[in-house]
Image (cartoon, rainbow, N blue to C red; front, side, top):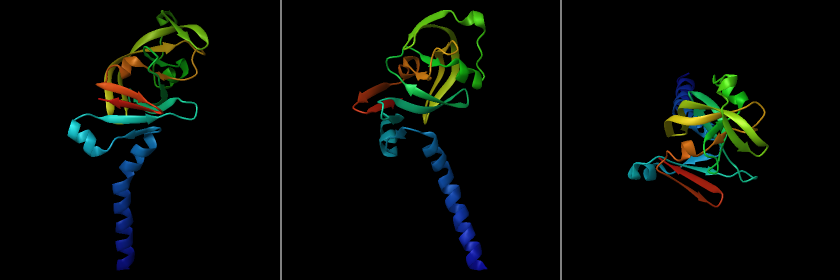
Length: 166
């Protein structure tokens, strides 16, 4: 009976220790945090995104407290959300708010300017991010553009890796 109790206590201890790490690993998608010592010694938070087979940097973000998959895009001037995902996280611009013209792979489209309270990618967090919500059907993926990336200390694109430093 004592062995059973000790075994259960051991399993509970392992789960309590590992659960936060598993959540971070599952959340990070294609992102990995650089070695903790490098992050602590420099005082900067560093995340490296690995390109997928198509060469895109997909990343799990938290926007205004809600999880959202995005594609990091240094060629995009702004963070841009699809109308569908924006609505899913509680952002619903009115028809008259779609005052910005933007170019997409599908041609020109209207977008509504918004300010996002916060975007978080793993340990990197940027507040009050200017963004756009694309009109419905205009965009197939959310873009993590330069209104987020440009607010960081630096970023580096090297081969199949995009490193973000805050």
